[in-house]
Length: 318
Image (cartoon, rainbow, N blue to C red):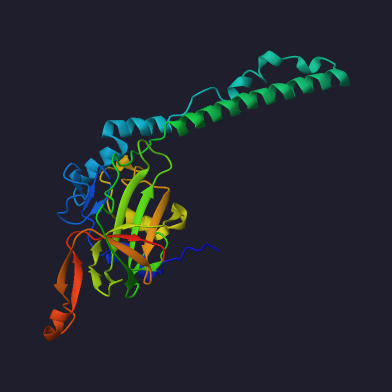
């Protein structure tokens, strides 16, 4: 039995539980972004809107090429080698060309020889036909459109390491590929058939959690987008049915001719999950703020760390 947890039907619509709306995507590194967000990779990374056909067209052009290239690739993949059918090779048999054959008295030995010859001839014709079909299939397979992955790597967690701590709180969200309960997850969708690189999508989010730091301070990570590093689990596409439904909602196709050319094609998903009790290290800049969950008279004595930008965390061994 698979170790992957199946998400219940009530939780199957992962998009409805998202911690932030996936309105944009970086077409250079394929990172999903929230509204009005620039890519973490910097100003040179191009961002396209998933909420309109113009933005989706830009993404599709990066993945599969312009419309003319997409049409040509699909035509080549569908094209089959023509040729004579088996029946045409025996045209004339049973017609005037065989008149009088029955009048010839053939002994048993002659009939056996003719039978062998006919068997070899038919086998040869079938072999030629089979070879032609194999060649046709190989051509179609090789001419299948191949998606282009991101041209640059997504932004890392950065080079500004911070304190260590342990995740506290409750697991209130589900990882889309494995269905695991967690406080945060990161997802890379990869294609086994690709041009350039195999990364087709990078996504990560958190429902929000606290980190109890080694010095006793609390770091509060808000719900929303997050950058994670840590050990991942690889899941085949067929084992992550809820993930497929989620991905299809991100960028629906606008042109029927693009049927089968998904904006985020993938065969496997690499997923990182963060759970309560995990030991982590914070990266990036943090502000010190009074804890809003503490009564006003005691806030001066209760200070928490809050990330200035998109939080970045690395899972470390205990």
